[in-house]
Image 1 (cartoon, rainbow, N blue to C red):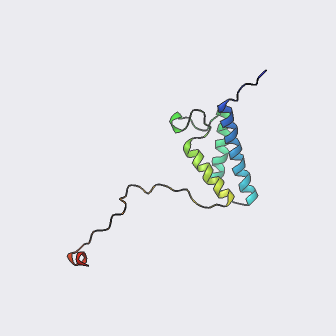
Image 2: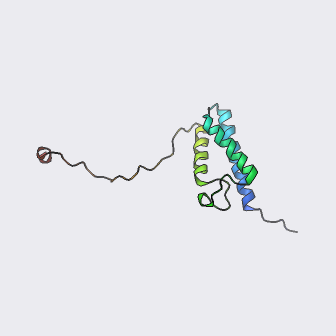
Image 3: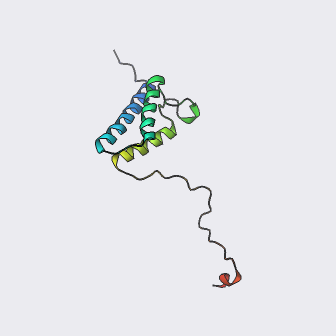
Length: 113
């Protein structure tokens, strides 16, 4: 008799809980001090996953079979990197700016130079 295929939601829940525990454990072992907000984030997300099976309510914020939203996953990666000692912040967008545009000269004398 064959075993049933694993449920993707259960797998996502288990993977998210393991990732949260791993980040907390790495910070403790490495002696890295997490901020109050980061510690609260790890605890509250783990509690919501255990209670509801996922840590977010709005289905537009993440996939149907995912336990963490996209932004929660990014924050978890940042906390894990901090716990490892890789203090490189995640790259954020630089807004709407033109690329390669030179500032225009203010006077005619500067334009001649």
